[in-house]
Image (tube, rainbow, N blue to C red; front, side, top):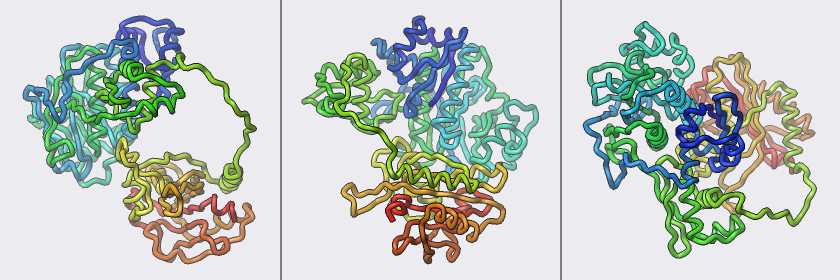
Length: 564
């Protein structure tokens, strides 16, 4: 879970009052947080929710607590589809060349508050948390803060020639080309892989041609070096998805407004029309309202609350709502995008109403706990895999279409898609363990070979024979990658596994499977039932993932295997 550190001066200044440790422990659950430590002037906070990045800062936690106390903040600097705020001539242009590497960049400016040392530390922490956590280590969101008094607007974002474009990066005195930064700058070594294989590299500069940054890698040493005392700043975000960037812009603009800055919107012009139009003024409000019946509130919470009580509870959570004909209609705050289902409204009603106001109810039935047969079988499989020298991995069950379908070169007809995903990173339920392992391999080129990893986990795919139309299975997946690895090696691992599981099996022709090299893969058969598949990963799949060495993979349906 995310953890943040702040100072008493910063946090209590944002909160408007000083609280004791006991008071902090009592109130923090409102922000899905808990006091992780308070040593000297440092307050450590642990967040218990990963789908609310707006809380990953001292300003975000303070804002939620103040809302609960009835001190909701109003942010009048947001534009929307219905209303545009004056950008006062600040413009930003996204060139079509950027689409080949990192499609979008947006930004806003701030002024009116001199940055203190505490402010600088808070902004750096917010940048790290949002880029590393929500931005998947800068893959989907990279963030830069610049000295806007040195910038001549409009700002330009484009795909540049990595061998001809150069500037002095932050932390160095030597001018380097963008490609040289990948090997000579620490941040280039850490994050350069994100764009290293692209024909052009992202480049941000002002109208004078002065460099701002090479996102998502490093800022320039001149414009990108924010110091204590600076009061005019430009905040920029880049990434492949626009909604993710707009949410981060909303969170940071609200945080910085609470810190005392005046937010100055920037008009962003895109090379082609987006779902919000060819140009928008940032910060931009894009969340859609949501409704929830009172009957769902009562059913979920086990207590009947009136419409007035629900509206009051949601107001404490920073949400404006009305109740009409036993239906709650909720306007989502600018800095939140975590309402995926009416049950999310119910959760906020619960927190806003007060957890202490629900009477505890003892369980009516008592049962003896024990592991299921599927879990016991899975544990025995894990023991065998560890015994063969494999390292166990744990992966998310939601991912993107690019990861689960496009990179695997399959048609995706059996995949289960989320109807209203929070972002493209969570739009598909995992249909196979193989893409998860390929993603690990794609970022493990620096690790000593051979690589041997496995996971016992769940997959989900369409099944017309099931009432729900889908089936969830427990699967085993494992991968081996080395400079020379092939069919015989993966076959030997399958043989060892089935030997220790006491399962007799045969192999059958796998036919044409785009994930594997034809003729170098096989189905695993127990009797007449196919329980899995293994083989050598096709070079096109390796290329799509950016893997430099050959790999073999295997996936076995443990639920089917256990039943035979």
